[in-house]
Every structure is written in C-alpha cells, then in structure tokens.
Length: 253
Figure 1 (cartoon, rainbow, N blue to C red):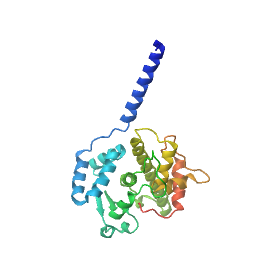
Figure 2 (cartoon, rainbow, N blue to C red):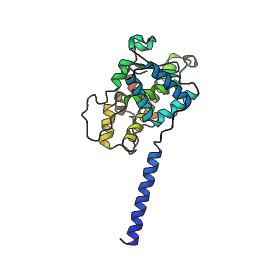
Figure 3 (cartoon, rainbow, N blue to C red):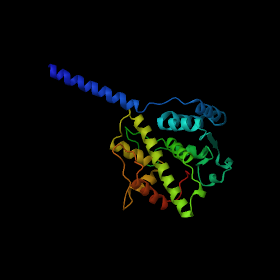
C-alpha cells in the first residue's frame, strides 16, 4: 500500500470512528434523578409486573423521555402514573380516552396499555423492520400536555380556546412522533431509517392517521425532514390541525 493510500485509509477509519462516536453520543441516556426514581418505586407497588415493565422499557429506550421526566419530576410538574382498568378510572375523561392527563399524572387504562403493544396492525413484517413503540409515543404526547396546560379563562372566546387547543394537540403529536422516531433510530444502530424502514414505522404507528392525513392536505401538506422527523413549523402544525378537525377523536387526549 502506498503512503497516499495508507493515509486515505486512516482518514476513512478516523472519520468512521468520529461519526460512530458522535452518533451514539447523541443517543446517550441520562440516569433518572432521585425524584423520578421515587415515582417509579411508588408506581411499581401498584402496577402489575407486565405494565410496570412496559412503562419502564419505554422510558429506558428514550433519552428525550428521560430528559423531560427528570426535569418535570424535579419541578413536581409530573408526579406519577395511574394505571387501572377503565371501569376503575373515575375521571370523566376515561369515558373517551384510554390515555389522558389527570392533573400532574398520566392516567392509562390497562386495556389501552395492552392495545399499545400491537405494533404491526396491518403491515407484514420485513427483515429489517424497526417497529414503533406506541408506549413511548403516548407518554411523550401526554407529557407535552402536562407541560403546556391550557386555561380556558385566558381566551376571550370559545373559538380562540378551541384553536389554541388544536394547536397544542398538533404540537403534542409532533413531539410524540419525533420522540418515537428517535427511539427507532437508536434501535437502528443510531442510523437514520431507510425509506422502507421509515414507511413501515409510519404505517404501523397507532396514530398514523394524524400524520398520513396531514400529508394529504391539498393546500399545505405536512412534510417530513430528511431524517424523518417533523419540524414544528406553521405549515406542519396547520396541516395536522386540519386533519384533526376532520377526524373522529382519538383514544388519546
């Protein structure tokens, strides 16, 4: 091997090492702080083993969830999970939603948690599939609502409140998708998903109707970034809002 060829080979190896190091560093998981650990300890006392594991696995798979939960638990914005059969959830929201916000807690019906495990509802598996983690999606979505509560009294009219609520809902869906996508990329050796992997992830996501519907808007459709994430810009937000206006309500607040 000539000196030039050897130099080029070393540059390639060094570049590959740097890319590998930084791509994995971007997905580094922070340890849970004392406040969040305490919440999980209390949660484990009341939850079934399988449901506790489902929630814990979702949290441990996502640096975005861990960051938000740590911050919100430390500030007492988030105080725990309420997991019960739907008939035992006394909040009137339980009549409409399997997952919803109850003050500073995330409430999830046990039947709903079971449904979230279905990550291939219609589409056959491919060898390199990265299935969606619907539990990550739901927790991220509901954390956005806890962090960004709406006060009806702050809006001069009902219509203005409804518009604000729709925008908040759109932003919650955007955050949820981006969080779940990041988990999928982490499962893909911290690499962007291929076109096929992305398509499978999107089509197997429980709340795909929000994104696929927004992509079909005539005037200003939603557009994904090159990495597959959704930028929280005016066009994407409005595309989701228009989709939500034409859709039946989801079983997620």
